[in-house]
Length: 471
Image: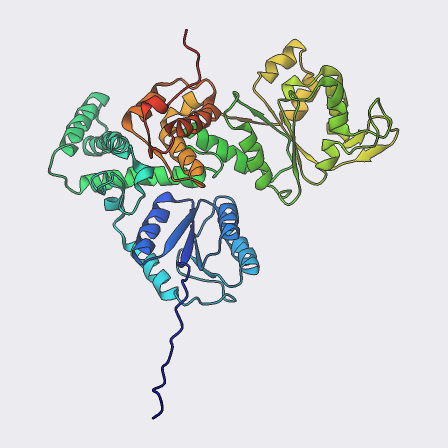
């Protein structure tokens, strides 16, 4: 009797969960799509722009990429074309469901299209209204740690939106009424919104407020966190001048993000494929700064055992960023002025001139115009550098962005470790601080708090240490 044959089925291999990448400057769009795709058992990663999406795709493989119809940093059509060339096997879709003709149709295309239709059909007003919070205090599908202290912020925002809409409704009702009557109607409308019976008016109010917030978020650059008008103005000025060769002077207090502005100017320029070379004029001794900038030949001075290319020459074809230009010695300013005027430099110890093509960006925390007037800085060089001015505001000037900045830094610090969150007392302590070190100080305070908290998932007020010595 022949033994019965036994068919051994292969053990199914453990597969990596399918992953989608959503690239959009619109945070609410990303969250809605993430919520729906997560329900379909996708892992979802988010990116605020094209450059971040590209980096995410390079860091870890993805099955699909959904790109919004507008990106804050790159042209969508160019991004789709270049991305397809580098990632030919990724299912690539735009927010309207279209896909490049030459791209593959992934096996999960119908799921992706379904998720996009669902996200578009989602009631935007219900999504953005404060009562639509889950048990953790966040919006549906939003990670709890990202909205740990959001109820209070949402309540304040709703009240602000109510006041704005009440003024609008009062003005519409009264026509050319006086300020006093308009205020009275506004107060009545605001009181009505806090009651239990909510009519269609709150939906209109929230939609108006949400539209303004989303418009601000779409206007700002991904490097510059903050939706305050002064931050949106910085992004606007960067976009206007970035494509040009115009020299730019970036002024602002220490720690306010001047280097980030310089990076954004370079990234959005036609020189982005060439190097951005930065030099801190305050960090290099005066005796070495000239050689660092212009380079030197072998034997030009004691210790120069071989020739070296300077920072200006290294930036040829790209952008030169002169940080803390106000600290540059007067004697060196005249040599820099000659280069700015004619584009030629002379290495230390060399008689020959070298033609270099660079765009110059400069930054300072000092009042350079006043220094130029007093003679502490060459006025002719100042006017050459300050063709276009961009001012980065102190954190105290856009304190309404504190919540957004805290969320950004906690997410950034949680890339290698679990994302932590703040309790109400910790957030209140941050809000009461005057931030003399601006955004850089906030980042360092949060990093210090994460270290002090150890394994605790929540940062408390005890962990918030501003590093000041108390006598």
